[in-house]
Length: 315
View 1 (cartoon, helix red, strand yellow):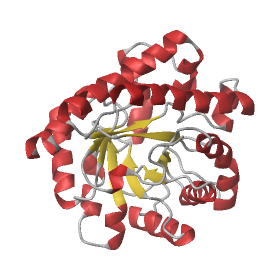
View 2 (cartoon, rainbow, N blue to C red):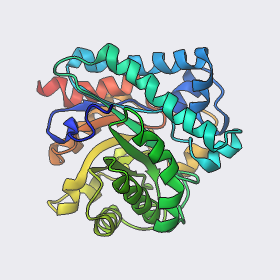
View 3 (cartoon, one colour):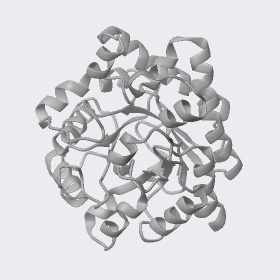
View 4 (cartoon, rainbow, N blue to C red):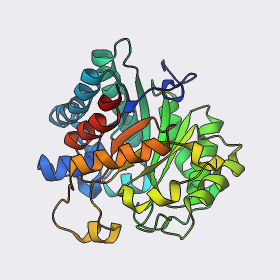
């Protein structure tokens, strides 16, 4: 049974770390081949499961040393129907993948959770299409499409679901509606371009306010991921109500645009210490942001730097 589904601890205060850029770490640092950037394929074999566990434990060790909470996100960003078809996974195989991903994290929670270190298990959803391109699904289509993955998570120990790297407002609404229908807490994470706007040209304010209006403000919080803080920090200034809905950040350490990252043959992992200072800057005027981690190009070094800048320094 889920431990926190009816009472998410990250909504109560305190800091919660999460991991970094899973796929970029596994590919560029570990030399692991991930077809179509799909890390869920590692769940099929003991060696792959061990590689995933080794990946997660680097971050859990940081949280244990710092006595913070942790949000464990599954390796299922690509585990939906379209990407599953590309990797040879039909609907039943995807159900098994999503369940297996939760089981792996449940084992890690059993090993690591202790008083003062709550560990939340979140089922990860990704966009139907490319996270760097405009999503064009309407809300009804998105609700029907993503319902299968959310329904699978609802039948496991997952405490919530989180949809990352969304570029389309309609897709975010559909995911939120499906989660609401299945009584699954959810977080919605948008990615932005270097101008702080979605690739569609919509602002973060428009995106968050539109999703809230269409869903009765169902998302438990919003996040920003897969962009450098310098791309969006200026749009987060002020005291507007929509800003208070942002509860997490998983930024890139690289200042490159999405197009530049997509075309690059090398990993730009930026400067961990500098990224930590950016997070300190952001959390000073967004004190409600509780979930702190990284995205493409980041690894445990970056999360340690974020922890040092935002948690250890204020402890």
